[in-house]
Length: 424
Ligand SMILES: Cc1ncc(COP(=O)(O)O)c(C=O)c1O
Image 1: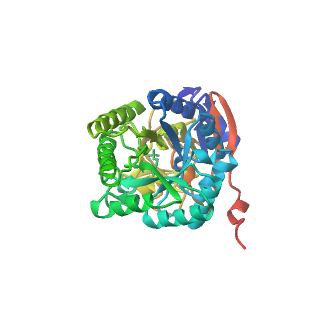
Image 2: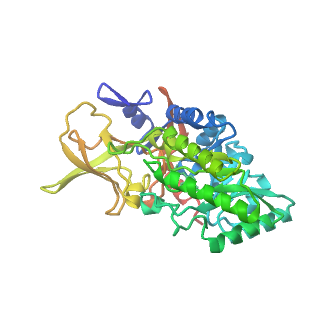
Image 3: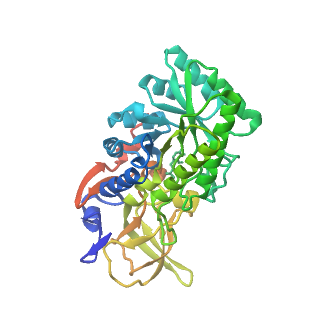
């Protein structure tokens, strides 16, 4: 990020010009940053550990362009719905390189996945296992699966994105009284082929301790399964969750901080427990795209409540970024057309939705804002575009991809007619 003549420059592009050309609100996502992150995945993990895999978690940011980038870089893809599978296919993504997740996969989705030849189904529960087995037998396939396990680790993140605790809707519980049921069932089924296990401890984790605790639990579990069932896992998927910088308070470390420590722990624990080392996979979403995106808004109004606070209202809000309302997520912002001007005070950025909680950021120091200014909110690349809604009949923003000074429209803005297109 830099400035030129008072304008914010993002990935070599003048953000004020982008706002003028494509309108606001506007998602701007840097392909250069995404590819740089993937290069780090290669050097910090894949190249150090032959046979390992990295998948991009579609839920963080799935567009056709993003699927093409992931495919061109040799990544695998984490998908969680028929819709994500369909979009990835349309982008030309090889289904054999997909991990199909989810705690409530429908029969229709399972059929689709099996018929297309999705590489791994990550099974969440016994009902899904039985349904999958039935479908696979019906079409004469043996589907490779992983079980998602719930390691029971408290990941010190917001409870809605803390997915690895024992009381979680995701994954099979490791309680000895029930886990045997899952493993025994899978090993006795002709339609599935158990390859190993998967965990995902939570999201936006800036420390590696939760991942390491989960590795210890997973390897202990693999050893017990070997002892009790004679089955030795050949694959272990370590999930995503690696933290990024949203505000100055966040101090993310490089990917190797997580992956080196997890790989070392896997190697040491397997040695100790006389296990063959399983091939490892990671599946980051936010870490690849979070800092690659910004959102540009037009300032609609500025309102001072004397002695209390000043609101800057913008032309988007929780419809394009629900994270502050959902998780209390924090963001930083600047006036893209007033770079270099001194701050005139602290402002709270309000969205345009009819919800008091539609606040994008609080107490942000800005130069005196006026209607027509362009506000840039940083680190909106993950879980914004994919979580956007049409609340208040708000059309979803356009999305522009930049790459070292070049830009192209990747997703067009929704029209008012798009908003009623499905209504009869
Ligand atoms: C199974 C699974 N894998 C990967 C991810 C990606 O997480 P993140 O974007 O934090 O890396 C998630 C997020 O919820 C997940 O549930």
